[in-house]
Image 1 (cartoon, each protein chain N blue to C red):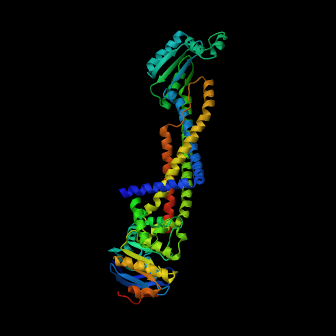
Image 2 (tube, rainbow over the protein chains, first blue to last red):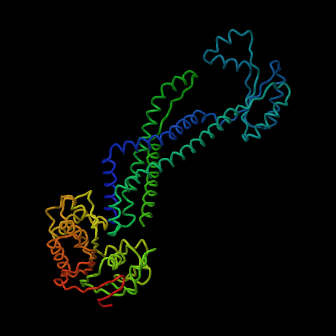
Image 3 (cartoon, rainbow over the protein chains, first blue to last red):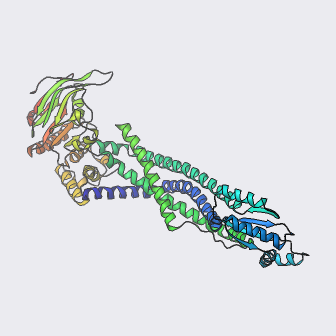
Length: 299
Length: 220
């Protein structure tokens, strides 16, 4: 066990020495790996923020029923009765006066509304269906449309659904991008290690001749690949952090224009650790592949 | 300790390098494998060190049949040997001491013990005061002694050398032989392939003579 540990420590030290011994190569490799990892991570951060925006809304699926403008108390009462009978879920009545009051409370709307000759809003019902399956929502909307004196039925979930679809596409694209860059990272490490192996071909040959196992020969390269990948991952996290710092102000401005509360969030410590771990694993894989091919080549 | 029976080796598109060679070497023996160049000495060296496998026949070292050895077991087998190569295979990107430390790193000896043992090995071949030098700065004889120090630092039971005195002047060659004799006296089995039998009389080794792949003298 002691021997085992000592050999691993020696291999780690060897890997670290090699990183430090060629600072220019190290910086260039870290740049390539950092950028390769930063692009998908930045995409992930953007998606994660967008998901945050819709997070509160996506749970609520609403169907709004707007009455015709001249609907009487009796006619809205009829709809109320039908809703109660349909048992479609929770619902509440929003009278045209209540709707106007709410609108007046919104920024900049008070003056506009004051200038109107009369209340332009209809009575409405907001239904929160218990069954939120898209098909049953559509079905419900069709039923509501058929009811008397109903002017318009709106599925408020539609935009959320569209947005969700958009997010799904975004997530898929980023996964594909991430996959491609992961391959790139493995290839970059593969090549770096290949150059090192060529530079140390005589040492590898001699070591093998005097009793080194393949594991002994592989070890320093694996640690080198993993270390370089992990550092590249941290560098990627730094790039994403700098990017989100630059974006924070304009995003804040944009958001305040919509009067919304939203703060851009970057990578969490867990995300950063994951990024370093992914870099390490991919670097290790590249190194492993490179040494395995060389060892097979020299028999 | 080493038993070869009916060992043959063909190289593709080449002549038969070894034909039905059989011999046995006991523990503690000193054996010279002699013959002209092309007789098969180096081939035999590579077969004994498990660098190559025989085309037919069996080589048993320490009870292990080399022909049947799994690839992953070869490194452990090699650790029984101190190997001295014709081209020495020293590493010129590190010091004399670091060259001798390599076999100890391979077996995972702790650094402090390793340095002590490497210095002891360098001392035995008279290179202790050159430990910080780069091997490129050593003379031919010193490089050969360094190769021996690296081969013996793991205290192997068998020392296998391929043409260890080629390209050396007679004085350096005599030094090298003295070193081999010293190891032989402490019980190490020594097998030396050489085409240059001038100093055989002094060491009185057992001789296995090869000619064009056939065994001529020596006991089977």
